Image 1 (tube, rainbow, N blue to C red):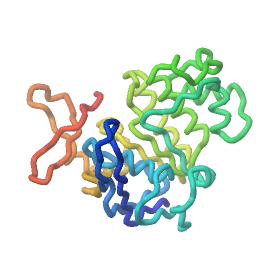
Image 2: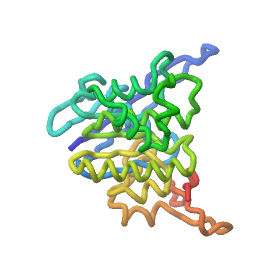
Image 3: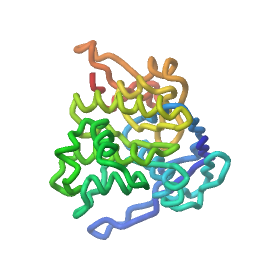
Image 4: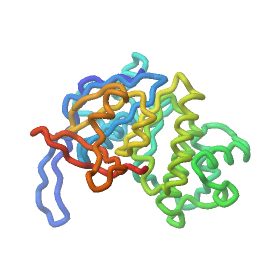
Length: 265
């Protein structure tokens, strides 16, 4: 189990390009959560609520101002990114990095941490809707579209087979056919690794529908969380002009609804 204990993160003050002082801001405020093994946890909420920052804190990319992270009872709060990766935490960025000069096959091999066959590389790419014959020898550079890059990164995280896999908006830039394939891939990963935890940050209704548990984060705080069956009715509304259009929504402090992003149907 991954335990988040009273996590707080304050972004430091900085300067804008024109030299103006930008004050610091609290992004995550006293956030506690248990991420259980064998469960799919979907984290959702309004844009700017702190979801991606929380994922970077879990991976060790950012350091919390206060609070602790425990992985199976071990305090990993001070451990750097590489140690967390060795302990079994994997992270798929919202905007993946490009690596000029590195081919897709080498990236997947490095991510796996072992020597893998061409057939295995093919399986990881096929799982995210890519034809390996067109991609294995391509460079992970600007020649790839955002959607292609996203899928290759997801394939590399799957190759790593982490105990806690975190994906930040994995649907971004992915077409509808590949989105269907991605849903199937997450479910296969979940069923094949019953002792692993899958954490997905998303606004998409179809991703929420595969969750065991849904967590809403708003203004850096835990707004509410619970089983999918209990949470979905509170998160989805139907637009009067299009009853088939599901939209993720979050409740504001005055009890009204504020729309986020339209779900793919």
